[in-house]
Image (tube, rainbow, N blue to C red; front, side):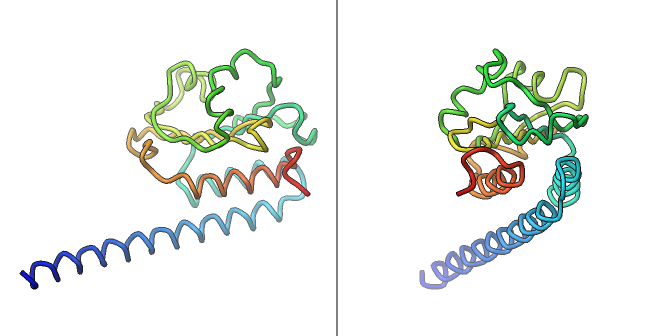
Length: 180
């Protein structure tokens, strides 16, 4: 019985070590993202830095930063498939009302209407997504990351690191209320 118990404890220890290694690797990726965002000297460079980091470090090619006009106006003249400026009163934002109310990242499959609004129709199939609110009470927009893999972002996954990414992006964008 003791040998069986010891084997179970050893398996659990190896599992915890694996989780710790994964978290350490993720923390390093977030650190690289932070460094890239710090080096960005204007809005266009910030979009490029975010695109590079999400693609290279996190393997995300389908993403969109949705900003309300209250965010730094430096983004108004930028044309990018990864950026959309929308009026805070836009009817389409009603689809994300519960996300904005919670102010917490959410992962999983999204409704077709949300997918089409964020990623467009006829684009890469989006099987799952991570939606990360930006700014206090999520009033300034969201960062949406999509994946063709239905299991890449699932409702049971921890969103702590996504919340940190959201904080970094909010600060870099200059979202109202995130700076002291």
